[in-house]
Amino acid sequence: MNHTRVFKMSFASVYPLYIQKAEKKGRTKAEVDEIILWLTGYDEPALQEQITLKNDFETFFAQAPCLNPNVTKITGLICGYRVEAIEDPLMQKIRYLDKLIDELAKGKAMNKILRQ
Image 1 (cartoon, one colour):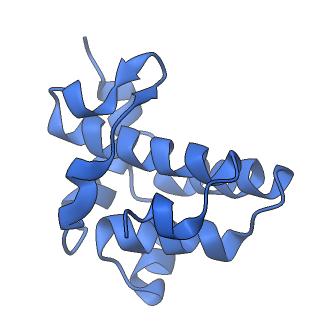
Image 2 (cartoon, rainbow, N blue to C red):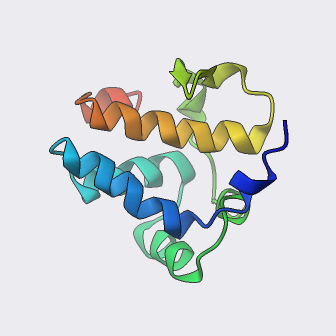
C-alpha cells in the first residue's frame, strides 16, 4: 500500500484535529501535547517549532529526538489495523499517535495512555 500521501501531510494541519477530538470529549490541549511529547521526545518549544514550520509527518518523526521505549506496549486496533503489526515504521509511528489520541478521547487515564 502506498502511504506517501499520509507521510506528506503537514503535522500542523492534523494537530488541531487531535486537539478538537480530545476537547469534544472533555480532555485538554495540554493532555494532547503531553502525549505527543511522551511519544516523540520533543520538548514544548521543539513541538511548537514543528508546527510553525508546517513539517510533514515524515519530517516530524525523522526529526523527533527519540521515540519512547514504551511504544512497544501500544497495542490494539486503529483504523482497522493492529498497530503492533504495521510493517512500515513511519506508518506505525503515525498510528501510535492516532491510537494514543483515541485512548485520550475515550477517557482513558493518562498514566495508562503513557504506559506507566
